Length: 455
Image (tube, rainbow, N blue to C red):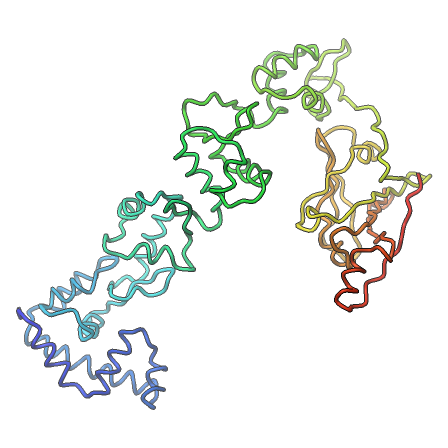
């Protein structure tokens, strides 16, 4: 085997200047088409010249290095072999002339989410990305854990991990303190690592800075949907479910705790039931009274609370007071709900309304659902009755279609006889936020009609 690179330098230098430049351009990642435009030849002509240069270099290598093809083939069976090892195998310095020789044995640059990884070779171009994504599956990662995690996944030590992770198409994004978070779960992952480092439960407001989430309620909602977190009752702090020292209730909510108590102990007086539930799942008295409206719970003939499945009669609440912003026509067929376009409606959140509406519609227990179709829309409006409140599904699309902006008033009409719905813009024209905004931009405002709901 050769001990210096004179043979490769001499072989490369013997090539025509144009061929050498083309090899250098290919090493820089240029396409055959772009190289052809630069040299004013066709793409096919570039391919022919590169192939001829490769054949020349291979013939010279055959004369200077024993079994180089077989040895390169074995080396590049790995997911990624650095070009420095290729050069060492050939006994030459690392230079662009090495690339045609590696390509001659069927090797190419490995594929990653950041594109081809230059300076590395493999005969299985997709293998490295498989290993990289195996490491990504272990995220979120603390900075000191990155190298160990990806090494355990089989990624070669010298692969430029931080460059790959920092690429715009990487599935991970950098977090606080050198951490790496999943792009689609960065807030929850940041909360997980923060709690892990902190070692003790935190309130939602303490997690705003590390997660980058702006509102405390949004933090709580995100963590509530992730099984890695638990909320401690009654402190309201958030902790990691994996912490063995926590005395965490096994029940996801108060209703499940109440059903579990009745299932195990049978019918109970209301006060005794509330005491037993509070021992398992600390909760307010108001919330426990709301749980009694669930369709799984009822009352026996002797006044005990029992499961409906075991013969109890469902409990109906008394009629709630009618809110001033709700009305019904004399025939009881059309209900109107007057609403204001706020930030929750504009971002597509459900609209919480008084249970007077669901009570009037016969939705006396929870959970209950009723749908109202909208002309020209494939998705109906859904009214849900829960134990603590009623909710109307998102109205964002309808509000925007009617030219409304934040602050606008509108009325949602629900017909009970045919289960249809519609909305009507209800602003007074001269004080309508949409009209004012349109006037500022010199655009004719959409028509707005004032609507008064009679008591």
